Every structure is written in structure tokens, then in C-alpha cells.
Image (spheres, helix red, strand yellow):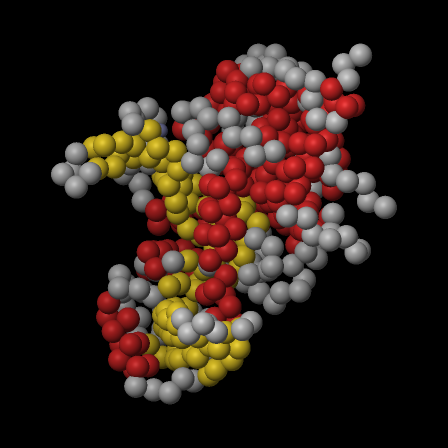
Length: 398
Ligand SMILES: [Zn+2]
């Protein structure tokens, strides 16, 4: 029988099965004379995410309680120690550890039931403040152009299209930088850390459908599937004109929905795009309740390699970064909360949020779900972890 999850068992799983031991021992600690070992601080930060505890003060209270030993944490420390530690932690080892976990998942055949592995990239905002305090703070203005506050922007990359969304890296961008420049840096680094042949495609929303981004993906050997929107007015107009008066080139079912598709691969590229032709897919997805969703997508996948149906599924996989990525990170893991207002601390916190989400999914959906064991939801795991910390053994200090 598989024993129920506890923080200590989860720690053992993460260290041994996911291979995080070396990373947690030496995560890139930049403190000149550390008093508290980095491994205690780092594991506390990761476990706190899985307990949905989203403040450094909350962690301080927990490690000063009788629950500390059952957390797998050896030393007590204060919230200021976490601030000092995260300000100085080199983000590179965390990024490499995340990528290594995701590569390991592929080697363990976690994605074997899908034909194409996707990477989705998208941006979001996190951490509002009323007075700008760090170099990543971007001002935002009201209708009269008056600065009314500051917020942080980041781009995230996630494995999608596999039945298991695994966030794997984050790139922030401050004032003077842009979402799609950050997206290119992120994609380059992700391919470097995950390996050139890890993924089969990259999927993005319309704002990334610019020649420089598409060329970056091409240079990295990754075909792109991108939403076609009004920021490419000529191509969109051409596609609308051609498809609106044609019968669909295909129809199929996706769950309970009926999907009509129009698919052609001989559109002209716009001036700056170095592609020979552009393939455009239009779909109309009919829901059983009568709702219809329609969208246009562009790609450099040839029809002989990827069918209309597979292309439709790739396009749809982009939603995972919104739903299983940003929405879950914000709702359950306090992605928008500022624990410590310092640019490096923010980046480390964002990376650890996504690392915790990836650990959670591999643990619940692959490890605990072996054999006939039912899938536990994320909140069920969180409750079980809290219960283990409040068991009589945890509070027995004798
Ligand atoms: Zn800031």
C-alpha cells in the first residue's frame, strides 16, 4: 500500500525521485557568511508553496512551531533571513533544476501518450505597489496619463499539449524592455536547458506573431503555432476573404464539440518574415449549447506533417498556460503577492511558485496515481500536508 502524503515523504520524493537533492544542497546561495543552511531555507520556500502559504512571515511562524520537524526543516529562522537569502540567490541553478525535472519526466515516459510536446509562452502581471521600489517596477497610468502605481511583468514558458502542464521557466521584463523580447530570451534559454529535441512546437498568442520572434523559434528548430489577430491586418484580411466563402476543408469532433476547419498553406508572408509561405487555419468550434468559438491561427508546419486536427489541438493547448499556469499560480500560490520587494527576490519567488506547481503535478498525477490509486486534487494534497503537520506526533515536543 502506498502511504499517504506527508511533507517528509514529499521531500524524499522531490530529492530522490525528481533529483532535486543536489540543487537543494547548493541552490546558488550568494550569502557571504550563511548562518542558516540554504537547504533549510529553500525547502521551506518550496514546501510553503505546496501548503499555499504565501508570505515569508507565515513561514517564520511555521518553522518556529512544533511542526518544523515534520516539515523536514532543521533550523528556525525569521522572515528577514528569507528576504536576505532570496535577494542573493542566483536564479540559474533554480532554472536548471526545473528544466532537469521536466527532462526527467520525459525520460520517465510521462508524455508518452501524446504525439506532440508543446511549449507555450505568455506574459502576465504580478505584484502591484503604489510606490515604485525596484528596477523591475513598471509604472501604470490612469485615463489622464497620471502614474497611479507600479507593477511587475513576467513571461513564462510551460510544457503543454501532453495532458500534464509543467511550467518550466520565467523571464521578467522591466521598463524599456518588452514582452516579446523577454519571450525570445526565455525561449532560447528553455531550449538550451531542455535540449533541442525536447519539444515539437511552440504555441503563442497574437502579440508574439512578429517576424523576430518567429525567426528566433525557427533558428532554434521549433515550428511555431501563433494566433492570427488584427496586429497582422493584411494576412488576416486575406485569410478571412478566402475562407468566408468556402465550405470547410474538414470537420471533426473534439469531445462534445463539433469543429469545422479551413486550412491552406499558400498565403504570402508579410514583408519582414523570412518564410516561403504561411499556413493559416481557421476553426469554428460549435459547443452543444449553441455557442460558437472562432479563431485564426498561423504556422510554418506543413500540412503533410501536421493535420488540421492536430494543428487545432496545438492551438488549443495554448490555453493551458492561462488556466493551469497563471490562473492557478495567482489563485492558489500568491503569484501576485510581493513577499519581499527586491527584483531578485521577486524572480526567485516566481520561479519557486512554478517549481512547486511542477513538483505537485508530477507527485499527484504521476507518482501517487500509480496502479489503482485515485487522482488527488491539488487542494486535497494541500489539506493532507497540513493535517500531517498538525498530527499529534508533530506537536509532541517531549
Ligand atoms: Zn518592483
